[in-house]
Every structure is written in structure tokens, then in C-alpha cells.
Amino acid sequence: MKKRFSILALVSVSIFTAAIVAATVVWTGSMRNAYSVDITSADPVQNAMRASWAKVEPTSFADLAERVGKAVVNISTSKKAAGRRGIQSSPFPNFGPQDPFDDFFEKFFDGMPQEQVTRSLGSGFIINKDGTILTNNHVVSKADDIEVGLSDGRKFKAKVLGVDERTDIAVIKIDTKEDLPAAKLGNSSVMRPGDWVMAIGNPFGLDHTVTVGVVSAIGRLIGGGAPYAKFIQTDASINPGNSGGPLFNLSGEVIGLNTMIHAGGQGIGFAIPIDLAKQMIPELVEKGSVSRGWLGVAIQEITPELAKSFNLEKSEGALVSEVYSDSPASKAGLIRGDIIIEFNGEKVEEPYDLSLHVGNSKPGSKINVVVLRKNEKKNITIEIGKYKEGEVAFAEKALEPGKADKLGLVVKSVSAEDARKLGVPANFKGVYVERVDPESSAAYANIATGDIILEINDSKIQSVEDYMKTVEKLKTGDPVRLFIKRGVASIYLAFKL
Image (cartoon, rainbow, N blue to C red; front, side, top):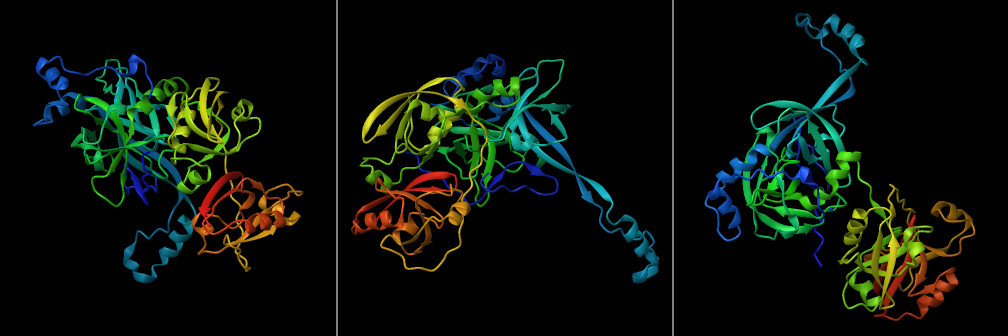
């Protein structure tokens, strides 16, 4: 199972004229032939190089850059925002510090609205000879004006055909009467760490800059990045302004969409796999947005402690912590505690894999899911629903004094007033965590104040008495698995006592 790559800060690689915008980190499918026009040269020497690129180390990337660079474009955007006019100085400076006109101009201009224009630069590449262009959503998001510069110096106004914020992908279009050179979209799934790659883009406004490197890693999960993307990491130099530009393999095929860089390091850039974009492009062009599948479950990662509590050999799969009522999952028979290990023939190694597969599924399609239920495999057929945006709220409560028990917790029965604050029914029966000993195992397992304890090792907890009886039976070294409610979410947490 690939390890999650956590980063404190990443920067989206588009550049603003005033400043570089920093961001805190920020499907495989087929596509129509219209969006994969090949720009390969008819030169037999170049075609021979294409056929042997994996076997021979290139001595120069010049031919490749010259051949594919015509499909790369520069994108300049502007966005208008209302501001406030600052205090103006008198145009007559000769009166000194007590200029009588200062008071007049201050009163006249102060408070008057002033329109401000923010400009930014990014990159993109032509994917259809009719002028259809692929780029990042953050390059063109909310722009009032989009201008595209071609490699021959011509400039065109562009319109947005479709955007998807969750993957940071956008499709725009310019109108031309002639066919334009379009990049061929490759297969990102075959890329391996160590493969040569080349980036072309508009870093810091320096148009058609060519940089070369290798694939440093694949399948990177970036906290705060696009939630439906596993990134390609590369050391090919990309900088602010490269956003939306292509990452080519040595065959001249686009295998990635350059998106962000590591804010604190050099030679650490990230690209969205082109396989993800290929599946989305037709729907973005036709509908302007992407429809995603919905399963109707809350899932979480299986920690080594949880794996041990469920008697699993490996910490793999997606643990179902809650099944929403009247959802596709509930109708199909999924239950809390199921561990999803396979989705439509694809292995699920971690929760992100399931989110990615479900999001890629078309609403209404029927999918086979393999789950582990009490260590027995079950095949379940689910009709995928349509995803709608939602929010998850988490209850918070100030720490209060009290003596912690052997779990390191201070718990309290849920009163009517507590129920109101915790967002549960007034007649709710249960206990909630009033305080967590910061040095306890529970604290290291991320048990938090305000968590409502529903179960301990499969024993239902509806009162402090239930809680105390269950806890008293536990011994040092025993695995402890809690099923808790946190805000609108329900999750499992496990640790060794």
C-alpha cells in the first residue's frame, strides 16, 4: 500500500503579477479521438526515436521540444474586484506638511469605490485542433477575461467550457478558422519512477520554457490537494506560471497536467495524471461539469490497531464507519464495520482508492463490491447514486476538570442540554467524552473532547454504567476499539490499553 505523502505547504503553480499565490495543500478511461490529435512528425528518424525511447538514453530533447511545443499555450487572465480608494495626496506639493488641499482631497476621495484588477499567468495545451485547451481550474477560476497566446505569437480570447474544482481541471476554447497542432494524450498508468519527462510552460511569464527531469514518484496523496487525484511527482523544474501546462513522456505524449510545487523544496513538483483528465474531458466539454457517483457511506483508514482489533493480517481496505439511511449502500445491504477491499474489480488498498472509484462511477451504474464482514468475503451489488455536495460539522467542547479512567477519559451522560449542543436527539442515550488525558493512549489515538462513545469492542454504550462495566473488564495490553460519533460523522478508533 502506497504511503500517504503529507506536506505542510504547497504552492499552486500559477503566477500573479502582484504576487505569487500560495496555497496550503492545494479518472483510467478512454476518450474521444477528437481530443487526442497526434502531432508526431512524419520524419522516420524521429518516429524511430519514439519507438526506442525506453531503451536509449536521449542525448538531446531539442527535437522533442520542437515537435510538441507548438501545442503548448500561455494563458493570461484578469479578474475585477471592487476596492476602496485610499487617501489621495494633494497635487500641489509646494505648501509643505500643512498643505490646506490635503484635507479637501482626503474628504473628497475617501470612501469612493475603486475597481481593482488582478492579473495572473498560467499555462495550458491544445487537445483538439478546433482550439479546445486543457488547463488547471485555478488558472481560469472566476476570471473575467482569458487570453491565450500561441507559440507563433498570436493571441485569442478564450471562453470556459467546463471546470471541476475537486480535480482542479478546466477546459477552455478559442475560436479559430484553421486547424491547430494538438497534443497527443498518453497513458499515465504505465509511468514508473525514473522515467524521463519534459515540462513546457510559462514560469514567471517566461513563455515556452522547457525543463527536463524524471518521474520521482507516482500515486502521491497530497493533504489539501485535489481530493480526486493521486499525483505524479517529478523533479522536472516547474514554477509559478507552469500551472496547467503539460508533462510529456519521451514519445511526445502528455502524461500529466502540472499543478503544484512544494513550497519548501526544489525539484518537487506535482502533476495530475492525464488518465484522470481523459475521462472527464468529454463531460466537461458537453455539460460544463462532472457528475460523480455516490455510495452513501462514511469510511476511514484501517490503522494497525484497528486491523488487530478486526483480526486482519494487513491494514488494507476502507472501513465503513457509517451507512447513511436511504443510500445506495444501505439499500444494497452494506453495514457498519464492513471492510471494502474491492470495487468493480479494482483493489481498494486505502479509503482514498474507494473515493476515487466511486467518484468515477456513473450514477445509475451497477457495481460489484467485495467486503470483509467478520473475516468472511461477501460480494454485494450496488446501484451507484449521484453525488451531492455536503458538509460535515464537528462538535467541540472545552476541557473540564475530572479524574481520567484507565482509558485516559472522563465521560459524562448525555443530558438534554448536552444533546442540544452535541447535535443529537434530546432523548439520546449515551455518553460523551468530557476530557482526555493528554498522556493517555486514547489521546494518541485521537479521541477528542465531545466525541460520543457508541460502542467499545462491540459492546453498546448507552449509559455511564454501561461504559464503566465494559472498561472494568479491560486489562493492560488489551486492544480497545471505540465506535464514536463526532459531529455528523461516525468513526472507529483503536489503541492498545
